[in-house]
Length: 185
Image 1 (cartoon, rainbow, N blue to C red):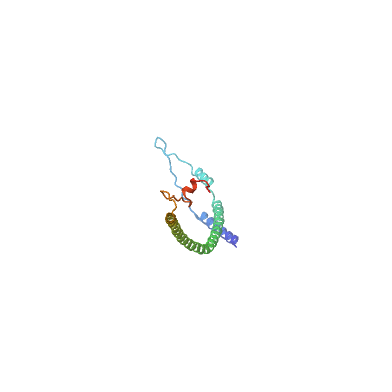
Image 2 (cartoon, helix red, strand yellow):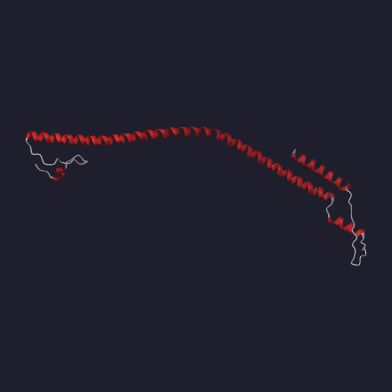
């Protein structure tokens, strides 16, 4: 069907160009040059007439050339239309694929925000727990110190010897004296 259209258009364009070429009137303006003395130099009109006809293409040649250009342009236009339709189809396919991706992205962003909130809460709880542990450690030291002081008072009450300074408690929970004195039985 497309080839028939091209043939009809080609035939019509050739016929129009032939008719236009046959009915066109050519006007020739003849300039008579003059020589250095001011005399007109006559030229023969026949020599100009033959030169003009042999230099330019004929109406039929022009019509054929134009119809070939038209056919090439029509083919190029058809290829561009097909390419445009292919791009439009691909664009629609990508739009269809994009819809679920947007929903998944929104869900992922929501989950990420919830996870961030959970991590912040967990970090706060961890910091509170760490502060509680450090506070409890200080309380344990104070309780150990009070217990040792109470033990020293009990020893004094029982009549035992009490050193001048109470032993210092290390982080490990043992006293300095225990570390300084090897096993004495």
